[in-house]
Length: 447
Ligand code: 5AD
Ligand code: SF4
Image (cartoon, rainbow, N blue to C red; front, side):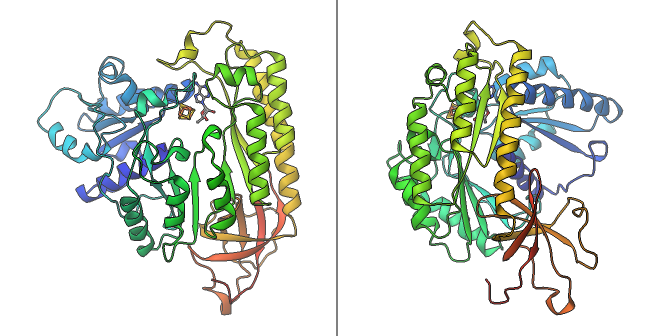
C-alpha cells in the first residue's frame, strides 16, 4: 500500500512539472512517504528526516513533505520533532498534494492535512514514468481496515474500510491496459471484505469482472484475511484464467491462544483447512504469509506451534517480524512482553526454517518450464557461470510470484522476440535463495 501511495504521489507531481531528482541534495522537493506498521520503519523515517534537516540548512528553499502513516499518526506533533518539515500529508490527503504545495508558497509555518474525508472514488489515474515498470501496476480497490488486530496500527492511521466502485476500478484497469499494462495487483488491507459494507458485490465477483478486461494478462491481489476467505474466492483460482495462483494469507501465529489475544478471529485449524481447500482448488497455488514472533505473552510452546504450522503448510515464502509496540493499539498495554533477545532468536529460527523450505521449493522447480511475464532488464548481476554469448539478462515473475532472471539466446533473428509485457516460457535451470534463474524457451507461437 505504501509503495502504491509513493507511485500515486510521484504521478500527481508530474503534471506540476516535477521530474525525479537523482538525490535529495539536488531536489527542490522531497516527500518522505512513511510507514508506521512497525517501530523500525518509523525510526528510519525520522532518521531520514534528520538528514534532510542538514540539507535544508544549506538550501532553505528545499520543500520537505512527510506523507503516509507516520504523518497521519503524528499530525501536528511532527512540527515539534522535525520543525524543518513544510507539509504533513495524511494517508487520505494524497489527492490534495498539488493544492497544498500551492498554499505553501504563501504559508510560513508547517501545513498539516490529516483529514480523513477522502471520496471513495478518487480520480482515475493513468500510468506514469514514476511506476515500478510499465507492465505491472497496483490498483487500489479499498482503503482502510475494520479489523483491529490487537498489535496493528493500520485502522488508526488508514481509517475505516471504504471500497471503490467496480465501475471506477474497471475504468482504471482498462485505461492502464490501453497504455500497455499487462498485470494488475488489486490492493486492500483485507480484500476479502471488499464491498461488504457498501453492499456492492463480493470480491470474487469483482475478480470475475476484471478477468474480462481485454489485453490484461494477469490478475493478482493482496491481502486476504483468513477469517474472511470465502469458498467463492477459493473457487476463483480454478475458474478465472487470468488470476495468478498465489495467495498472501497472513497467519501471524500458529498458536490458538496467541491468535485469540491478537484478535485474529480464526483458529489454527481453520487456517489449515483454508490452505487445504486452496490447494484442492489449484494444485500449484503459492501460499505466502506474515508471521509475528514475540507477541506479548507468547511462550516457547506458543512459538513452537508457529514453527510446527510452518512445517505443516510449507509456505512458498514468509515475511517474519519481531513484535513491536505501536501507538493506540491494545497490545501495547499488555504485560508479559517478550525480551528483545528472545524475539530476535525466534525471528532467526523462523527465517532459518523458511529458508530451508524455500530452497527445497525452488529446487523442485529446476527443469520445469514456467510462464513468466517479462518486466525488463534485470538489475541483478548475471548469474555466475552463465554461458557467454548470451544477451541481456531479463527479469519477471512466474504465476506463483517467484522472481525469475533469465537470458535470451541473443541471436539476431530473435532480437525482438522478448520485450517488456510479453508472456514467455522459461526453462528453470538454477535455484537461488530468493529467485530462480533460467533460459528462454523459443515458442514463437506464444502470446
Ligand atoms: N509488530 C510487528 N509486526 C507487525 N505487523 C503489523 N503490526 C505489527 C507490530 N506491531 C506485521 C503483520 C502484518 C504485517 C504487514 O506487519 O505481520 O501482517
Ligand atoms: Fe492490521 Fe489486522 Fe487490518 Fe491487517 S487485518 S491491516 S493486521 S488490523
